[in-house]
Image (tube, rainbow, N blue to C red; front, side, top):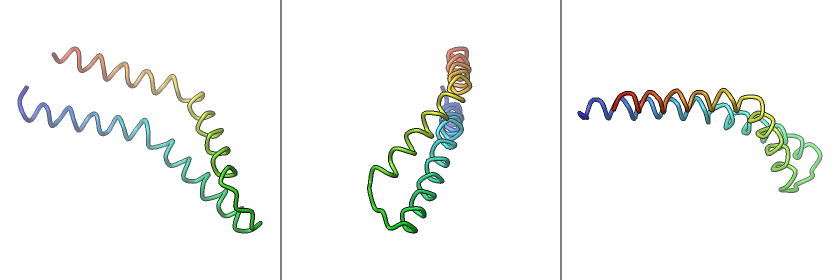
Length: 84
């Protein structure tokens, strides 16, 4: 493989990682901010209050989009093996 092909492959890996991980990170961040605002309004500062809703939301998101993510990974893996 040439340097250009390796560079292109690394770019594709980066884009795929952003497509797969980005939505979960963003939604987790939004849930954390909403919970933090609620904690500031009610003056309840418990660490588990932020952790549990994030865990539940990410679990629901994985159940809803897990098959699509798996298909994307399978397609990318097949593309890499076909390029060898």
